[in-house]
Length: 597
Image (cartoon, helix red, strand yellow):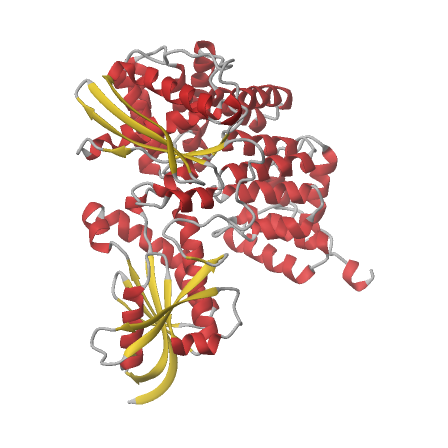
C-alpha cells in the first residue's frame, strides 16, 4: 500500500437507468462518443489519470486541484453546449464532486476517506454542476476564472464530521445548469422593442405520443409571433431549453433577455383540443392575460391566430397589430397531415440519421395526405437537404434533384412561406447563383424577420458576397435571438471575421466549437498563418492532415462560395502560408518569410 495526497474527481451520469431503459444501444453509443471526443481528452489535457469507470461513473486522480477543477469546468461547459439541441429527456449530463485528500493506492486503484468524500460531493452537485470541498477551495484561491457559492457545513453520509461544501459557479456567477448557459455577451439586446419568449407547451394528454403535437403547437406560435417586425421573439432552440423544467419565470426572462413570457398547456383527446395560455410580465411576475380555448381540432389554426393577435395587441406599442401585415390563411384542412408535419419537424431538429429517416417518412406522409400543403413540401425539402449535407443518402445527385423538386412545388403552392425562401436561398448559394440567393434570402427575411436561422443565413450570404462587416452584425443578431444557438453559428461568425481580415476574432470564434472538423482546422490554420503565428498555423495544418491525409487546398476551396475572386485568393494565400498541399500532385513553395528569404 502507498499513501499519497491527491485531488480526486468523481463523476456520475444523471438518469442513467432511465436512459438505458429507453434506448440502451443509443445511450451507450452517445456516452462513448462523449468520452472519446470530450471527456477523456479533457482529462488527459489536464494531467488526470482515470482510475476506474463504472459504465455511468468515473473516478479520476489529479496531482493538482487547479487541473482537477479546470477539467471539471471544461467538461460541464462543453457538455452543456452539446446538449443545447438535444431534447431534455435524452440528454447525457453529469454531476461532479472534487476533493483533496489522503488516499491509499494499491494495484491501480485508490481508496480512503478522500475518495469517499469526493463521491459524496458528487451526489450533492446539481445535474450539470460541480461541488468541491473546503480543502479544494482553499488551494484554488483565485487561480481560475470561476466563482463559488458557500453551501456551509453539510452532513455527509458515513462521515461523523460535517463537511464545508462549495458549489462552483461557471458563468457570470451563476451555477452550472443542465441546459447550456448563454454565451458571454450573447444575451439578446431588444432595445426599445417588446421582447417575448414562448415556453414549450406542457402536454396534458397523458399520452407521450402527443409530445409532438404540444411541441409543434409551441413552434407554430413562435413562428407566428416572429413575423411581426416590432416584436423581438426568442428562437425555438433557446425556448425549448426549458422543456420539462419547473423554472422561475423571472430567472428564465433574465437568462433570455426578454420582458414577457408566454406559457401554457395543451390537451388533445380525439377530435377535441384544449389550449390554455397565459402571458406574464416577467419584471413584475404579473399575469397580464390568460385564456382557455376548448375547440375542435380543426380550429387549431384559428387558436394560433387568436393567441398571436392578442399578444401583439396587448404588448406596448401595439406592434403592427392593427395592420396584420402577414397573410392569414389555413395551411391545411387535413389534421393528420398537420400532425405528421409537426412530428417530422421535431425529429429533424435532432440532427441524427435515424431521426432524419423517420422525419422524411412523416413528411412523405404529410404531402401524400395533402398534396397542396406547401409548408409540408418545404420541410420535406429541408429534411432531404439535411440528408444531403451530412451524406446520409446513397445517391446524392438524386437527393439533390428531389430537394429542388420539392422546393419548386412548395413555392408554386405558397410564395409567402419563409421556410421555402430560406431553403431556396441556401440551395442557390450552393450553386453559386448569388442573385437568386439574394432574392430568396431577402424575401424570407421580409416574411419572418425574427427567425434566427433566416437571420444567420443572411449574415452568411453577405459574407460570401464580400460584405463581411455587414454579415458579422447579422450573425450577432442571430446569436442574440437565440442565446442557445447551435455551434455552427460560431462557424458562420468565424468565417465572417476571417473574410473581414479580423483574424484574432475569427480564431476566438472558431475555438468555441467543441469538436471541430478538418474544415474548421483549415480556417484556423489560414487565420494563424495570416496573423503571423507560424507555430499555431502548423499545429492546425497538422490536425487537418491527420483528419484527412488527402486534403488539398484546391479541393477545399471548391467547397466554398466566395463571389469575389479577391476573397478566394485571400483564403488561398492563408492556406498556402500554413503550408497545406495545393493539390495531389503539386506541393506549395516553402514559406521563407520567417527566415527573411
